[in-house]
Structure formats: C-alpha cells, structure tokens
Image (cartoon, rainbow, N blue to C red; front, side, top):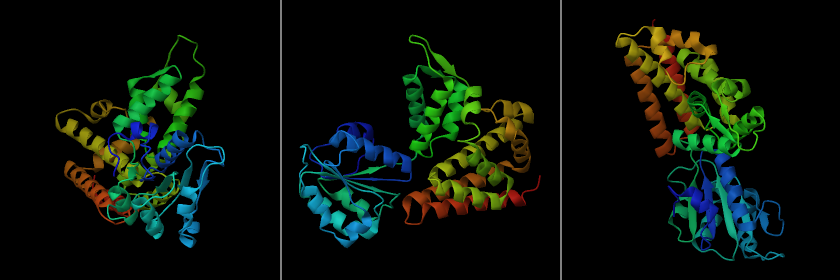
Length: 346
C-alpha cells in the first residue's frame, strides 16, 4: 500500500502487521528523518546492535537469502528487530520485492531509496503488497514548512515575525534535515528564553544568522537563471544537487522568483512605478539582489515570463510522471530559461 496524507501519524505508530516499509523520494533529509523515526518507534533507539541490523545493497545482491535470515533472527535482549537496507535501487528489487510479497520472521524491514518513478519495480512491489507499505518523501510544501518553522521555534520559546517567516519558507525546504539544521542554528543565535517569556525572530535575525549560508547558493542559481548566465546555472545546480538539495525544490524556488518578476510587471502595468511595485513584494527583495532584480524586471516581458513558467511546469510534470531523470529534466529547463534571458532585449 502507499502511505499518503497521514505520514506523521503512521510513523509515530506503524502498523505492527506490516513487515516492510519502503521510504523513498527526492528529499534525502526527510528520508533519513523518517527512517530514524521508524527505527526508534520499533527498536526504541538507534544504537541497539541486538535489535538493529543493516544490510548493504551490494551484500544483498551477492546473498539474496540474507534478508530473510536477518528478518527471522531473534533479538538477544527481546523486542522486535529492525532490518535496514539503505540506498536500494531496482538492481536489488527482486529479493526485496519477493520478501515484501511473502515476508518471513518478525522483524520490520526498512528500505530507503532515492526518488523512484511510478514504474519502478521496487515501488510497485511495495504499493501492491498487503504487508508492505511505500512511504514517499517529497520536498516540503510551503504549508508544511511553515508548520515546521513555527513548531521548532515555539519549542524554544520563540515566535516569528511574518516577514521572517516568509523569508524562511521561501528559501528552506529543499531538504528536511538541512532545514532543521538551519532552524537549530537560528534557535542558538537567538539565545535562551526565560521561562514565561517569549522572543520574536525578525527578518534581521534571520539574515544575520543564516542569510549567507542557507540561501545564497540557491539565490545565486535563481538570479543566474534570470540573468541568462548558463555557466553559473550549470555549476551551481551541480553543486546543490551533489550536496543533496532536491532538484524539484530548486525548480520550485526558481518558479517563485519568476512569479515575483511577473507580479512586479503586472503592478507596473496597473500604473505603479518600479520601486513601488517592488516594495509591495513579500518577502521583500533581499538588498544584495535589488540591482539584479530591477534589471531582470526591465529585461523580462510578461509574455517571456509566461513562457518561462510554462517551461517550469512542463519540467515538473515530466520529472514527476516519467522515467526520465528529474535532475537532467530540470537542469535542461533552467538552461532553456537562461537562454531566453540571454537573448531578451531590454
């Protein structure tokens, strides 16, 4: 079966009848977070060698029977065991799918994988099996990311101003683990809060703490796309994806930027001057990029911006609904948009 819409409740108390769970998706940080959460829910922690066993995909390929042997083994200290296979691909789909369809033993088998297409043998086996489940891990939406930010800051006695929240939701979210690290850094930066008191995180706090780390690499890519700088687009895209940033989240961030350009052009068409139109944006344009944003508003016409949005929408649909590699599809779309910008006349 496929887990949708109730992931957090499922993770907190996984169905004991399940023998195996596939955790997959483009958000590598969220995959790791959910793997650890499920391991803790069943084994009580992450460091009990009697209740947790890891099998490398290569070892499973060489010895397919090992999965059943590990799942049937009993914990020396009692309790249900967890068997984990991290970084699985369709090259080991056959023994894993066979186990999912006809499980043995009492352990919970947890398998992690990168983004899998709807036709993936691994994914199909778990979606169809009665005692197995497929748990997708996609990049956080604006709503889920906003909830994570509020909850994390609230736990530290902090509230967040609306402009700071907008800045964070616009730039975090590509990787759940990296987002949490940045928020933890922000909590440390804000300092301790006395019992009964609260502190409010402002946009100035966010920029001072994480403005030069979490956002700048992504912002460099976003503005290079709008400038028409194909070389920088390719270089930064490769670095971000190699560091684990989801290409879908990169696409989403570029789309937001294009929409902000389109919104600014629309307000100018309604009679506002450029400065007034930009001042209406939320979150406001970061001061470091105001000059480039202004230049891009002048360069990009509304028809060109509409074309860029079409390219981004087409790339997202292709990446999510076909077997084509998402990174390659999205990088190609960004290069196409940069080419449009390079050839645009002011």
